[in-house]
Length: 352
Ligand SMILES: Cc1cc2nc3c(=O)[nH]c(=O)nc-3n(C[C@H](O)[C@H](O)[C@H](O)COP(=O)(O)O)c2cc1C
Image (cartoon, rainbow, N blue to C red; front, side):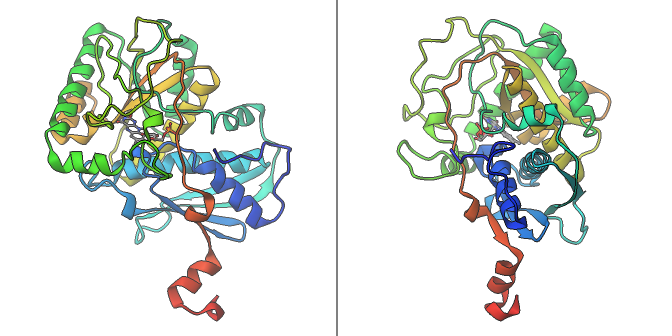
């Protein structure tokens, strides 16, 4: 795991060091299938974040919605890293309509000491793990759910909690159906396989067997996990520390009032903010995007909501004992300096 500079320890001084620190932190954001679909370019006291379409899921995510959600999560994390250094991030999201892959420009000039809450969130960035399976039979605190709803609202999104048994069962049934539809689609299965490296792989992206249980855990109602192992028996052995009864947890839906790149980036920011808050409170999250990847099932959820808002992700929250290990690409793979960019394009070092 990449070491993150803790606030107050070996603080980066130069703009290059700040950029490297910010990116080393941002890469720990969640991303669909751990595609890490981002590229950062540092130019003095500015970082640009670009979506990397080469890492987009062409089958599961043809519109790039989940790619931009993932980039939004990285953007929130980058801003948090700047705050931990005492910088006030100046952010422009999707600043150039002619360049839709330019997700954000992030500058830092002014300094204001970070708040305790910001440092608390930062300390969770490398601790947070996506959970796959059931939860311990203890519900997440109601006060946390209330706080998460406010955090989502701060980004123009909404976190809706399925309170009734009927609502939970309906979302579970749609997730099961979506999962089945995807498993029957050979192009989808090939794409998933490309992002599910085998045990012992040296890859630093994709979902490794150290990140999911070998024996999928079932809950009532059941929200199926992605089939990363594809019948090969890969995955973590069952932990003896978990309780025999597995709970579904609090079933939530992240929605936005509109459906376009700005909503997706902001939903991603809201997602990472909520995931870090949850982790700080000892609550883990399982993410299910199958039901929003199958168009007609996404539409079915939207019709049920009845207020025209767009589902972006199903999130289950609960108490989990986690052994999962995830991987990330190293900073040099995702961060370039503006000078190096110019050199690459022109082929001439002098052109910088
Ligand atoms: C938009 C989005 C959709 C995701 N969908 C799923 C999903 O359907 N199933 C799942 O197990 N994980 C899902 N994830 C979690 C990623 O697989 C996870 O973030 C990635 O593997 C990195 O692992 P980590 O979150 O433990 O650091 C999703 C994440 C994002 C940002």
